[in-house]
Amino acid sequence: MGDFSQRVFEVVRQVPHGKVATYGQVGRLIGAPRSARYVGFALRANPEPGADHDRIPCHRVVFKDGSLCTSFAFGGPDEQRRMLEAEGVSFVDEGRVNMEACQWDGRLAGDADGAGKPTAPPPNFDWDAELGA
Image: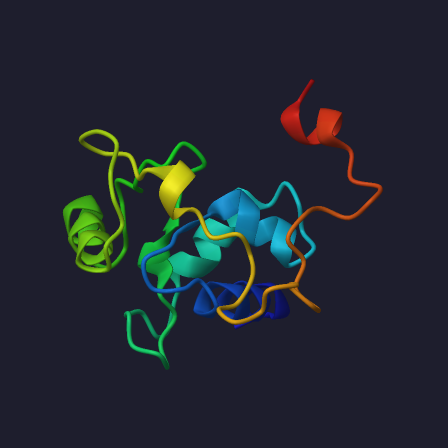
């Protein structure tokens, strides 16, 4: 795996049980904003999927609106939903995660100040360019 994929896997390993992150959020956290699609490509090649502590829990990564990937590589969207519900992730309708309640803030458990962990884009981040405005 390349450096990009390794950085994706490192961040996704940190998404806590019962929380989700978005593809774009993972991209921003690794310092590669606007790379959501490539985050998805990296996760499709996940060499260690699963919810165990030594695995890469790619099922915890969803689209920004909370919807699940229709081509979830490790069992389809029904399996992804089953895995998320087993962790206590709630859904607002038939296919979308309750992002308000379940989106990870980018911090590790017990890391109240987020020391060393980015939780927002860098200071010079261009929101207009990111959002296509």
